Image (tube, protein in one colour):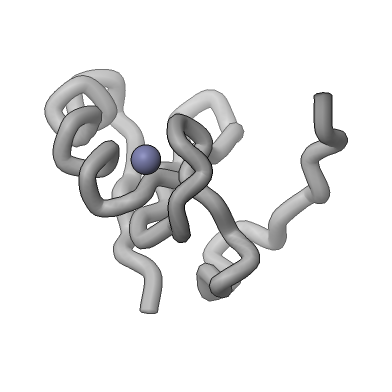
Length: 63
Ligand SMILES: [Zn+2]
């Protein structure tokens, strides 16, 4: 298990950020209403966007 480095909220995604689901380069950051955040590649962002919006997450594309 890796220790998650605390990301600064709204910091730009970098090539070091990886999708939490598959490890591909992250393209979308999802800020959860509870305060956490998830990173997704393009594929998983599309796959999870409906659910994330349903729970009130704020999706922001990376560079
Ligand atoms: Zn992915």
